[in-house]
Picture 1 (cartoon, rainbow, N blue to C red):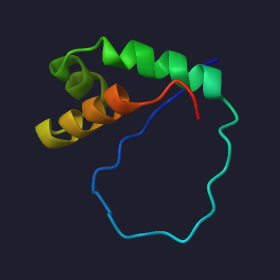
Picture 2: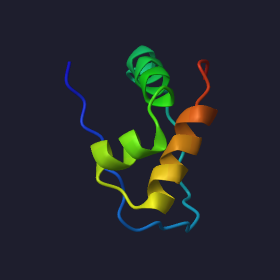
Picture 3: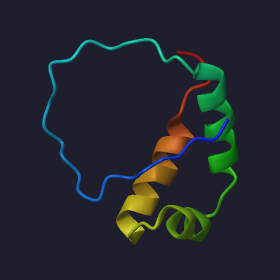
Length: 69
């Protein structure tokens, strides 16, 4: 399986009134997060074409990703 992650170029922090759903690919998401956790900030920045701030934000998100829903 090939998964492409496209980072947001602008951050919209507006609250949404949308019900949460169960992820369809939980196992794949866990593997992706584990792999991304091992990348350096520079690796994430280069791989995803991000600014310093967005690379740090994504690194923090991967680090905080929980293995269980």
